[in-house]
Image (tube, rainbow, N blue to C red; front, side, top):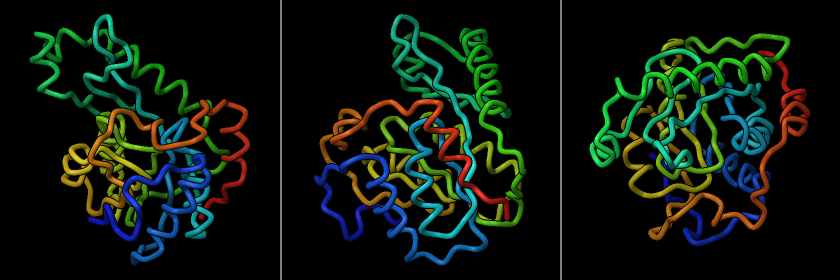
Length: 221
């Protein structure tokens, strides 16, 4: 695991591109086998673009959607990708007095949206994931719910290794997600962490037009 190496844990990134350059440099110290980079749409894609450039690797988008709490849609009780089982935070489910079955309808709505987005962001050329190192990139880890759903889906494609790479993460989320992947790289793990956006000067939402422009730069390998 590579979190916390050679970086000031309290440093704030200028923007997602700056974060991606730092992350790309951190990843360049690891031996990677025929890597492919997957940016979690939308915020992870600008970060992933810089990582892909640093590693001379192809990049694509991947989608995972949070399953929000009743009345608090921004609080992720879990997450789901276009395919594969949903993942849930058992502690939060207990706190809300819920179980996965009660969230089935909410989960399926988010799965349908993940499929719609994935289709919209699909590159003209497919890229092989099997037997190569797949690097899943996001702009940060707060609860880690969407990242967990994404890496579990990638595992279904029989990659060589799954690598999770994020510029900044809550220490407890980094620790939990390290059990889901073969390698986790996170240069900054601030002890006091309330939201990913606090570690960026510019954390504007990524638009679809920005995302399509960034994805248009990819080359299939």
